[in-house]
Structure formats: C-alpha cells, structure tokens
Amino acid sequence: MTSSDTSGITRRGLLGVFAATTLIAAPTMSNAFSLLRGAGDIRRLKMHSGRTGETLDTIYWIEGEYIPEALDEVNHFFRDWRTDHTHRIDTRTIDILAAAHNLLDSDEPYMLLSGYRSPETNAMLRRRSSGVARNSRHMVGQAADVRLRTRSVSQVARAAAACNAGGVGRYSRSNFTHMDCGPVRSWGG
Image 1: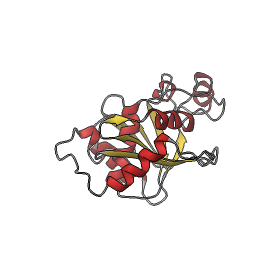
Image 2: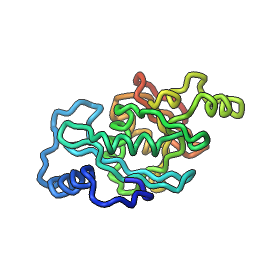
Image 3: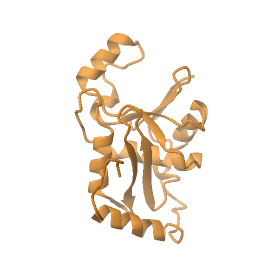
C-alpha cells in the first residue's frame, strides 16, 4: 500500500489482515520452483522510492492468486518518475524481488532506483551512460534496480542469483543490484 493512500478498509486490506494472521500457520512449499524459493504461500513486496518519497508495503499474492489491486499499486509505484508514465510490471520480476528479499532475511524495504522506464527516459539515460541497454528490460516492465542499506550489492545479487530465474547485475560502484525476469545470466562486479 502506498503511503499516500488514505482510504478506509479495502478488499486488499482485508486480504492482507487475513494473510498476516495465517502467515504463521501457513506451510511453506518445500518443493517450490527455483523462482519461488523463499516466497512461501504469501508474497509481499516492501519498497521505498527516494525519487517520489512513496512507500510500498503490499501483499500481492496469496495461496496461488495474484491480487489485482496490489499489482495496480506496484505498477503505479514502479512508474517512470520522470514522465509519470506507468506500465504493467511483469509478475515474474515482482516474484524474483520478493523471493530474493526473503532470502536476505531483512525487514528493511528495498530502495527502488529504477523500475519502468519510458523509451524517452531510456534514450536520455543512454546518452549519459554506456551502461544503459538500448533495449532495456526496464522499458517493458521486466526489470528493477534496487538497493538495501543493510546489505551489500554482492549479498543482494547472490540472493537474486539463488532464485535462478533471470538476469542479475552487480553495480557495486553505483551501489545497486539489477534484477530482471529475462534469461538467467549475471554481470558486473
């Protein structure tokens, strides 16, 4: 739920309360696919954006079902803050972020540095840096650049790589980790 939300009890809020009360009793999936390792029966995403000042703390998946209202919040939160354009964020990327966060055993929210990027923003960033891909997965809602204050880039990248579910880039000099739902690969240092 974003911090600017002032509405009363919503369907998603009630589901979140239900999920929180059943979390302790919920069994974990011992033979989960590698993508879901660490995600459990309830998937939660906790993030903060220094660009917009918004915070996202949402349970977006319960017992095999994505929660559409929560995914709408994720899409808005991941928007291109430069243009205010939104895009559907691939649920595989959200799952990788959540599973890696669980493996890190941290209650600290991710700091989202880059989620969706409009083609205009991506072109502008390419002019400024050789490290920005022409056909970036950010432009199709399949990537996120994140950091945790209490974990190193290497620790976050190892957790993401342990999911064996997409691309993981280490940007140690810039202090962030890239995660995407593309082919399994890694780069950076």
